[in-house]
Length: 106
Image 1: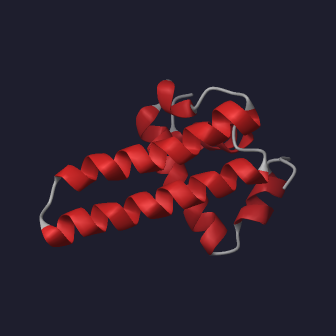
Image 2 (image 1 turned 120 degrees about the horizontal axis):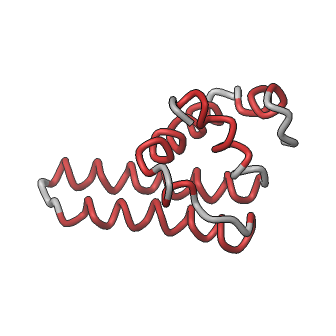
């Protein structure tokens, strides 16, 4: 994979189960809230908490629901970007169509 657009279908296939995606949404949303709190209160130690929170929810989904290795291990930056793209697609209602376009059961 040479570009994020090449990576994107792989990323979504690694998140084929709805429960895994839900855990990612929870983890990413909480991580954003914690990071905003860290910024607003000027307490950088909460940035680490944000990262741990986001990854904990995601990795639980991968290890116990999908039974695969998180894409973070091989493609950390693209995986991070994919988390936010998948969340944006879900929040805007475009995720089912994107899954269908790529032939991934929703």
